[in-house]
Image 1 (spheres, rainbow, N blue to C red):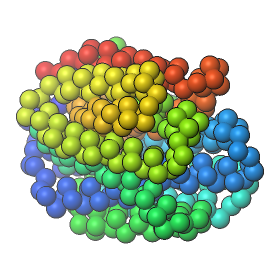
Image 2: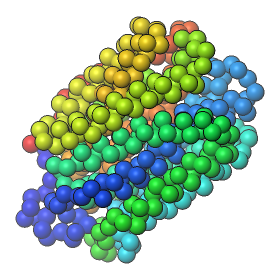
Image 3: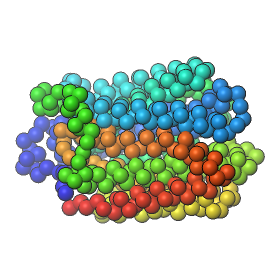
Image 4: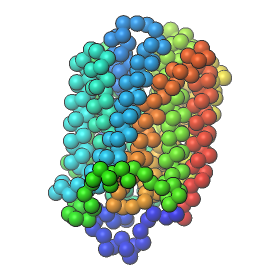
Length: 425
């Protein structure tokens, strides 16, 4: 089922609602990539390092199970907040008639709130306050990312979206290693670490805000957002829009598989492989992962633009992640983990770029791009939030990490099966 308007009907719409036809240039892509680099550094550095270390320090225990469960509770609450923040702020941006455009006010305000929330998180020392700070930071991340992803549908033509979406996932890989290296090499504590990445976020977002135009939406075209309308909009019928439904289900499953496979790597290295220096080993694994994410996201995303059949790319990338998870499950060696990191990076890099482009092609309406992509983005954040707690439960139940990685492979394969049902003209 196609969701793209015909050129004749499209010509009657204001610029903000038209299907973009002109390709964006290198400057647009550069500012977009820098914005996402700042976002990923600010979101993933706390998630991978600062937040777990802060929780462990507050709990005053080396019991990794208790640390993981506490981390999982905080992440789970943040994930629950994302369930609301993504579609609501996306729907609000769809209706924004500011002279600065629909998306820019939300990007600017969300970025400032994100930075302030990070600094706040770094200043507190109790579990409740740490959790509140991270929930506020997560909500702000949702606000900005909902608007940034909607900008692809607003301004990038379909045959360029795989390449542009690759500049979401490539900065993610760079952001992980850059953030971890910055904090560990400089020996930054909690407050200094959070403040440093907050400053980077602000600096890297400024060019996109200043130099990327955002078409203004005329007043009166989109109905005001009411609670009833918002609740109704949260449901997109899979019967009426099957491509949307299968793409969303695939996203949830694959991202859950990826989150299970990567979320507890530090603990896997320390307690599963008994690494002497787990932090350094994690950085090396992340570096290998990063290289393959960048290669896959930029080359395969662009290839999907040329070949057109994005669902095939998503299918094979999901299956490749399953293979990586099974290597981790049944070959408990650090050398095997390095191989798995490469496979996972290759699969997930391709998935992030191509699946994001696919998501923009299955949206029900140009009037609700932000809201519908907000629903899609739930599948990126919520699995990451619930994975630590679910992963800890799997490890505790068996006393090893094998079931954790088997589950990771299972969900990735299930995601591949779901996306195989997508049919685009």
